[in-house]
Amino acid sequence: MHQADTQRQLTPHWLVCLAMLLLLIIYNLICHFGSDDLRLNLDETQRVTIRTTLYAVTIGLFPLTNLVRHILLRLNQTMPGDKPAAQRYLTTIIVTQTMIEIVSLFGLLMFLLGDDFNTLYIFSVLGLLGIFLHKPKMTELEDIIQALNIKNTA
Image (cartoon, rainbow, N blue to C red; front, side):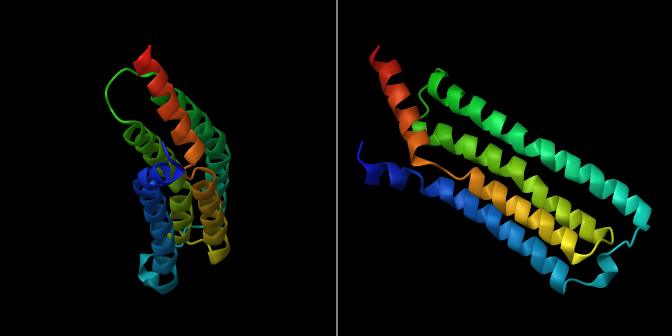
């Protein structure tokens, strides 16, 4: 398969990443231009506890998402069925991008609970990093295609 064909097959995968990026931008716009009536302004000690918990969850979510991606990639190569490689890989991208989008939602949540923009930006940048780390990779799709071709010829 030619590189251009493989790249074309990744278009829906990139659209998933674009959708996640747009959601992140929308969260930030809501916080900047939304009404202050939406904010709960919890007590500082409650926010610190929630924020610390969300940071811990975020720290755990990055390696967990990486592990899930690794497992899904291997399943894409070995699971029986007639699903095309690009469709199998799209499922992997949707799952991992959704898992990492949760980090961006933590920023929105903390902002609505009364935290400042700094916390929103930290979680937004972490979410952006996650989108970048789990973007579609042509080599991964090519590996799935190759593994399925070998399996089908055997």
